[in-house]
Length: 360
Picture (spheres, helix red, strand yellow):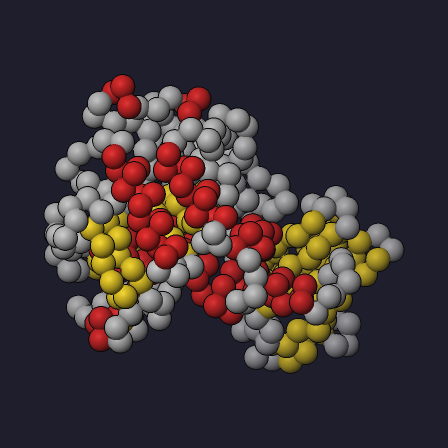
């Protein structure tokens, strides 16, 4: 299919290291890593494009697909140390540990506290080194365990749950909280019905937080490239603020589905030191859909309207509840609007927030 041709031809596979069988190829024994990579690095316009098609990658194998023992955690920590030495900015980790073939090594839910598992300790240390660590929440949501695994329980690990293409939670997506009461996952992304490259070198549909995690990791890399002065902690904060449930969160969706365009706008506006609260719209000009970010100074009900320049109301949403903090609003079905200039207003008691938008 040539999905990875540009990745290879442009030399953006910086290297490979096999921590399971040192010296052996990382490309043999299992196709899971290839499927994960495809969600980020695929670059065949018109066929499949990943979330970071121009990024450079180190391919580090730590998971032994033929067994499940605690040594794989040590492999992961060694790989994270290597990644730090190689200057890696973002780690995607599509794995998690709860139980092992040797049951004496297995974890209980009490161990999902951000402190016990060696892999979790290593992941949080990687974060202190400036690496953005993205990890799948796990696929145990409809099983007896149901909770996130390690290292998704890490304090600074960006744990990603899975949703369907309609934004509803995938039943298999592992949930929180951590044993010590922290909300996990951090956010969610599509993990059911995800396009991947399979072992037959064809595009197919697959399920798992293994794919929601790299989808986010690729987007993180792009957002960070656009805003290189941010720390990993600052970047994480902006992504969470852009998500659909922010400032609220729960143990199923975390802060919800992120909006990286919104996160970029929030970062840009912060740099310009815009006074809060503020109203942002994008894309502007728009064609058929308009997305709005409104930072509300309090929990309140507001009215939202779009009028033409003569004051004729085209769209109205009355008594819409806004949480204190950032709110994401989608205004759809604008395709029928005539081309021209419109005014979007949010009426909050005696306060009116307005923005000029252009239909093209």
